[in-house]
Amino acid sequence: MPIAKLSPLLVNQIAAGEVIERPASVVKELVDNALDAGATRIDVQIAEGGRDLVRVADDGAGIGLDEMELALTPHATSKIATADDLAAIQTMGFRGEALASIMSVSRMRLASRARGAEAGGVIEASGDRIGSLAPIGSAVGTVVEVRNLFFNTPARRKFMRGASTEFGHINDMLRRLAMAHPSVGFKLTHQTRVTFDLPPGQTPAQRCMALLGDDVAEAMLEFDSDERGIKLWGMAGLPSLARATAKYQYVYVNGRPVRDRNIMHAIKEAYRGLIEPSAQPMIVLFVTMQPREVDVNVHPTKSEVRFADANAVHGQVLATVRQRLLATDLVPQARLAGGFKSSFSASSVDLTAAGEQPQPQIESTRDFVDYFKRMDPTQKGFIYQQVKQEMADDREDDQADEQRDDEPALTESIRPSAQSILQVHNSYIVTQDEHGIVIIDQHALHERMMFETLYDRICKHGALESQRLITPVIIDATAGRIATLEQVQPLLAKIGIEAEAMGPNTIGVHAFATLLFDRGVDPVEFIEALLDRAEEQQYSPSDEAALHEVLDMMSCKAAVKAGDSLRPEELGELLARRDQIERASNCPHGRPTTVRLSLRDLEKHFKRS
Ligand code: ADP
Ligand code: MG
Image (cartoon, rainbow, N blue to C red; front, side):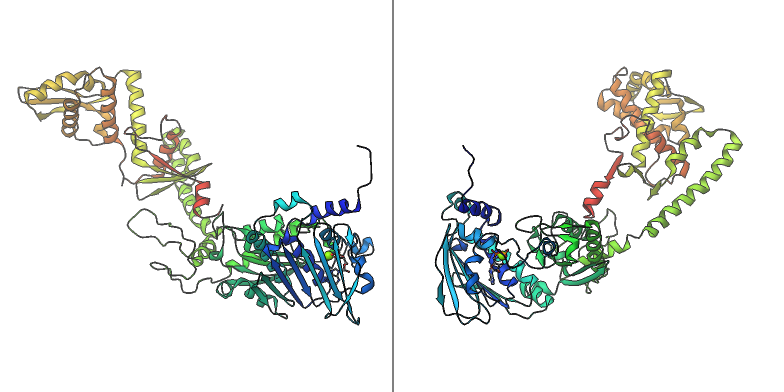
């Protein structure tokens, strides 16, 4: 294709492609113009979601008859003249392309009467054709009608959605604009139905309430701050108002609605832990600063901005909103004892811990806030310090022991893992690893360790240590029992038990496993249980599985029990050896020895992520 200049129509249609995405964009451009013209009332009428008609009427300054045609020409604007003006934009529009773009893809009618002019004029324009100016009797102000949007660009027309979807976008757009201009009256009508009619002369807070609704209004907290040239004002919704989408976030920079990721992130951070991670808070936020500190000229539709100091904006938004939320007694009627009653109980997390005592539940916003207030580092430190002090005391004792018996191996192994170990209810050991909190069933772990140690010893030495009894222990037995005993004798020998028949109805125990003896295990009870099991399971003495079972029994009997109070060095040793033992995460019976609460789970649970 040879190089040729694009036709003016095509140039405008390409420009329209950037700025005019859908009917809502037309509304935005026309309302921007009305605002720039100093309108106090803006009336928007829509037919078929804007596909058929967008009509915007204002009572602003109007356009002089001699400028009507110029207004429709591309790059014709009354708003800036020099590059300096561009650096300090105060108006909504400045490119001079909206009217030219819109008319290139629609049938437009522009009627206006300038303030002080005796009469008004009307001009029709469509595609690249501008009709002749005709006089018209009208009030001061401007009325722009846009019909049959994209009638001559079928590809774009195809991308428009149904009337209700397009009207939804218009409604959302106009609300955003109305929020930022509380002094201006806004009326929106779809077909014949009035969607909203906001009076002029409202305060920002009144406008917020009017747009968000009375029920929501009482759950909004007003905030403001002014630091180093950045002014913030807004209303932050209680966490219970959080929604699934960011549709109810109204964010403005110097009066322009923006969708700035930096600011949205700061807002999300301010609500961190107060709302579900996927939820979006309801908020109205106005950021005001020197026009030179922010570049609004980034995108044709100007919903993106570029800050000279984005970090400062982020930090101030985060701090201001978060402080406002946390400083608020959000639900005064909530009581800490018993169940909570709250009018804002949308968020609920069951933090009830296992145990007889019902724990307070975080059920209301107030509780969340209390929770975060309680997350006082000095408090945490207090508990930690206490544990550390105890550990230090023990270490001193250990050092004394060391000097006494010159056996540092045990204490060495205690020390590194002694940090922050806690025994709770004399049953569980609580500690931490790099992934989070680790809760260990002391009995299950010790049992596992015993098993491994004993099994290892049998493999190495063939049998466990045995304690000879001064007088044999007598067990009453039937002939069948004695037969079983004789069958499993080699197995008993392996675990350090020496027992034989002493007459037709008696078993005599001559030696018992040292380990069990030391732990005070009753030989009669243990051997009877073992023989019961052997009969039940038809043990064959050479069977590896039988040895496992017997070692299980021993480990279980010898291990520390739930309820045994352990000295810090015992806790330390358990943990130190835990790392060395294979399969330490399950006891020999397959029950878990350890539960881990990962930091991730905790964050999820406390709604921090
Ligand atoms: P821009 O707003 O970027 O200047 P537009 O194409 O939207 O460009 O408008 C062109 C010019 O037409 C504006 O600069 C303004 O002077 C005039 N104009 C448009 N709409 C109105 C209106 N509603 N009231 C008064 N003047 C208007
Ligand atoms: Mg404009």
